[in-house]
Amino acid sequence: MSEFHKVNQQDRRSCIMRIAMVVGRLCYLGINHFPSLPNGQQVPELSAESYLPVVEVVTELLVTLQITADAFDIPLLLAIKKKIALNNKKYPVELCKVSALLSASHRL
Image 1: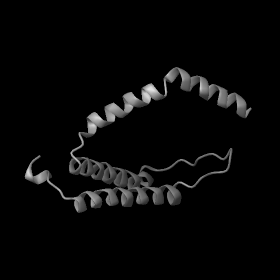
Image 2: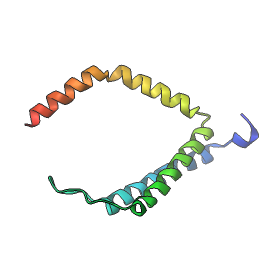
Image 3: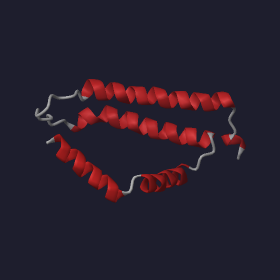
Image 4: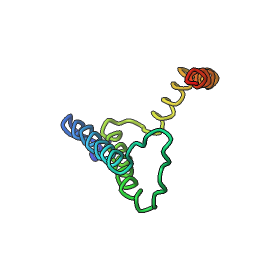
């Protein structure tokens, strides 16, 4: 690990807290700019400008996640691939489709 990537525990804690802060901002945007609608009500068309704050916060979140992964020396792309492989074993597509169909028919 290079000198640039060496961080102490406090720096790592700060990285994690920053993720929480950015996720909080994303939740705030979701609640205030994209309210839930009663069943059956149509979602109004939104302009591209209405998505700009979301794009900014999601971008900040991705950068913050990469900085945190670096602080913990996590190869992020490899970790994502491993997580996908694990989920594929835990939740096979064939079983998930059957489960979704059963759930949908149960609601009727």
